[in-house]
Length: 456
Picture 1 (cartoon, rainbow, N blue to C red):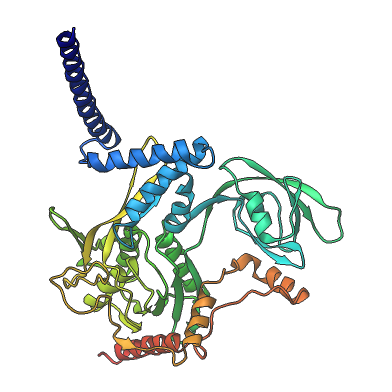
Picture 2 (spheres, one colour):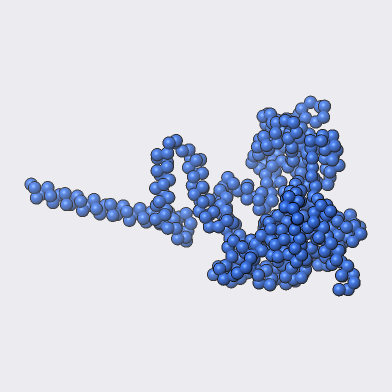
């Protein structure tokens, strides 16, 4: 009996050992299979996947509060975001519910009704609707008071904007008070709103035919906006511009394709930029003669320490080809191109650096991820170093540039609104007498035109 009992225990132990080993192998294989399912062809580390699973399960089972399905999803997206951010300062993960942030920040579009509002003594004043936007089509006008959104009273612009947010092609009800008339409800369908990226286009010197534009970022419609504004400035002069100050201060970059289109407006031939990728051949982007519409325009670019990425691609191509003079301070030095990866079955996006860019002269200007083989600073130095004597003056100049620009069709009405209520103010950029960098850029364009006239 004793021997028989001992033999039975050995048999049980053997089977138990084999079962545990089999389970362990199956678990490992399961994690590997999961990794392949999550990202086919990838090499996800099974040990770390196991740790992630353990941590997640312990939180799910033992956290002091029950976790909803939404909260569980948030935790996983936070884990993914942390992984992507750990790569470098440029990489970003956009969860499915944050895809709108990417659209606004990179593409320059958003879902909304197209209104600019301001809080004035607990009232939400509509400064102006976006031209061609849903609010304008619904009949909203400068100076309307928004008293409620979907029957919820609002007393600040933040409250109003929060209530107005919603899905594309859905309706929102605004209660509007206009003058002495009784409040009325207006139904507005949310649509796609294009946020202008090119602003403050104007004539700086009418006699010399010198214009000015400020590009806040390279968004989807920037090249088209540039064409329209240059045509508008031509129309104001009655003839084509001879010179242009192109302001890129605090322009963080944006879409490379747009940057190539904008650059091509001024550059007829030659390299614009070379993309240097890992383990693949370089990709060279060159100018297309058919797209060059402003080849003879005397051009000065304004840069500062926050001009980055696509701004530097543009500036690098212009200076390397001798096509423009650079005025201001050394640019930021973001010499990497980010690719945005998305998938057809969900809305998340991953944006990571995938290549360096080289200027036409072969310069790598990246600062943060600068290759160890390169020495010196990144960024692009200006041809003419000009800075503000007092930092506060520079901050004021940039703050003015980044204000909203009132569309031309509404300027008279908005000016009248500001005069009627002194608490409503719409600031415009500083003129050259208050902006030393702009003054230097304007003077440089004048010198270029004078030299051209004298045959130099």
